[in-house]
Length: 298
Image 1 (cartoon, rainbow, N blue to C red):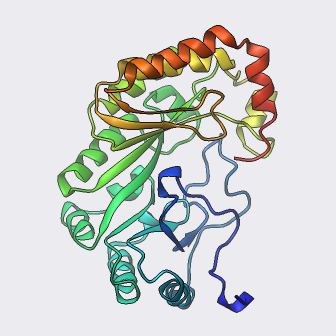
Image 2: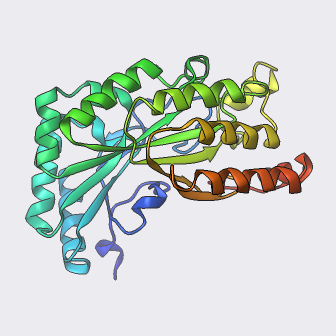
């Protein structure tokens, strides 16, 4: 395959673990918000839309190499920010080249959902946009404000209930350690309370892993934020899992997790809690902290 036959990707390509078998198509580059203090994923990338000619060239290549593709994931920090008309056009173009594609997923911010009407959400669902991966991170209001997430827990509740009405699945992220030292239990309880009022199909668990280029690093250096210890994070996660009542698949097996977890709630709750208890009994803080220091890239 020549360079001209390669897909157009800019920077590091991010996609959730559960989209591992999906065809990837770049629709946007960078993040419209780009202000979360803990985030260093997109570096100096400025947000932009992928040009239509690049998208079409990529679709032609995918159609040639993976003509039987059934699931497509749009790459970019939050492609759901695209206008309703752009998303409809894109979904139709995908079907022109890949008629076997049945579902389309992508990352979305809570504010992206708010910009669509109820009728538009239903129409997007009818066009095959069936799943949104939302970086909720936490339901703890002080943490959301401090980290400059750009939305509140109440916003998440309102907008995801609209997705429920439209029939669009959504997948949440919970980030342990985000509330800082001494606040893990509060964050776990607040987040479980929020998620229990909604219907996330998947809950992905990650843990705050701070790199020097993240704005939060300056807060740590100035003493405005104290990172939670690793054992506190495991205890936070234990509280979170114990408090969840909504049925969902829990996926906590990315590199940021010192103890990988994977299971279905409520069926696997006892096993997951037992695995956390076992880890707390076996590992001291220094063991877990050494693992975190060894993470060089997410």
